[in-house]
Image (tube, helix red, strand yellow):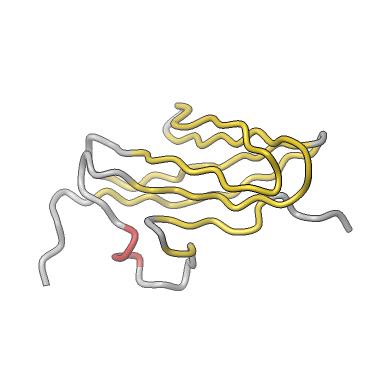
Length: 107
């Protein structure tokens, strides 16, 4: 079994966990999501984040290492950003839900 490339994904400085209350990850229009991807392996890797058929971030990272991007959206809605990491002839994907609320949650 080969080693995974993506070790961990953090969203807004918290380790992404689909069981956590999604409110902690949400943003309002124009407010950036901070995405950090911790990578394992050796050599160089290409990390790309895509959503809505657009490339939001593209970085080359020395392995092991961390790729970090801030992405934002101008309109409310639910998006799925696909993180793709390619290194040494291997590729790995991770789907990350990004929710943009119309206005800040009060409560």
